[in-house]
Length: 203
Ligand SMILES: [Zn+2]
Image 1 (tube, rainbow, N blue to C red):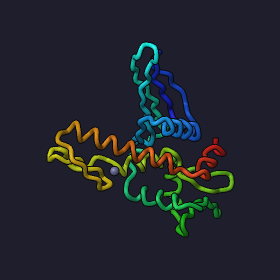
Image 2 (cartoon, rainbow, N blue to C red):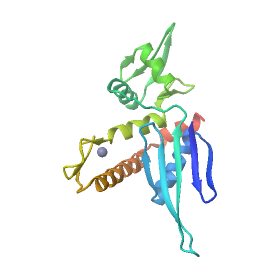
Image 3 (cartoon, protein in one colour):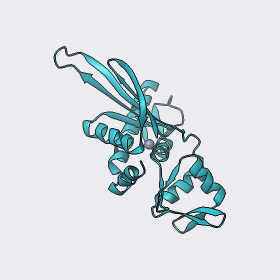
Image 4 (cartoon, rainbow, N blue to C red):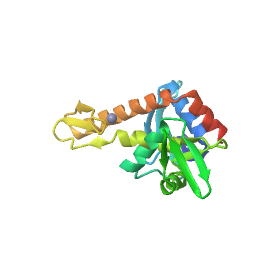
């Protein structure tokens, strides 16, 4: 579940969005060509400008999605487990007092399994299938495209390895933001029908 803040002419409207509703908002943003960026806490911000056809006035609009439980602090070991689960066919198994996730032939220890669930990074459906939550996937995406290194030497660097020429700090910020928006749009476009159906089923 996400906290949703919509900024419009009358101010802000706050509400909540399920994972499937959040995906619908991001797919709609993608179709309309709105700027959209995953956040490290596992949410997203969507921005666009509304133009009044009569007055020609421009007005900034946005939708901010913040997960109920931020996913900050995805360290190497947690990311490795999430990558394993994201390969697909992960299951949640209960053997007496051992509750473990089995992913790609690997058994994730009970302590790690419990932590992944408590942090809302994974979700188990009624058939004991395990999937990553939208917030985990958005957090992983943001983590994979952080600003890396300094930006005073004429270049802006992303943690994914992308390097782009940027004569000043402002240009560096803008270029990296544009890159993260592209990666977020590609991520939303790549979401499978199976995953989308799983989000809808777990509402
Ligand atoms: Zn990147």
